Length: 201
Image (cartoon, rainbow, N blue to C red):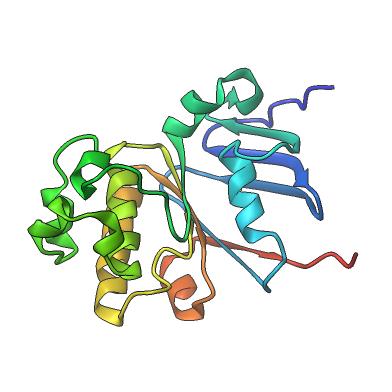
């Protein structure tokens, strides 16, 4: 039976979602808000992001501004609800070939050398790939960003630059779901938090 859309219906809403050992989980995130997801390793944080992005089969339902995930083709849903993995896939010969549009504005904001855009992805450090994956996602202009440890490999200066960009995304009405093990980052970014507990086998 289809889940009824909660009253109001704006923002990202999930009701009784689950997959494998995670769930059921309920959440509701308004525009301009950041939900930080925490929990021990194996609690299902990454799985929850993948559920929200329609990347894994799951129970329950997810809505974005009243539109049900189950009523949309998965690729169309992911244009609006974009998941960025800890180490995203790169398939083209040059970094810039992965971008929809000009990435130089964002790369300059991140203090990344412009010649990185012409480099082969496998020549980049993990931290460079993390920042470029975030730029790639932002250029797609999603309504929702699902970020899985986006600054785990970054120094403190780079972390703050990433957070500044995410703050601008939120100020423009974006919705952010952020998985982080960094308590200080959660304190800076979160408008709400969700702590997942590992379910015993």
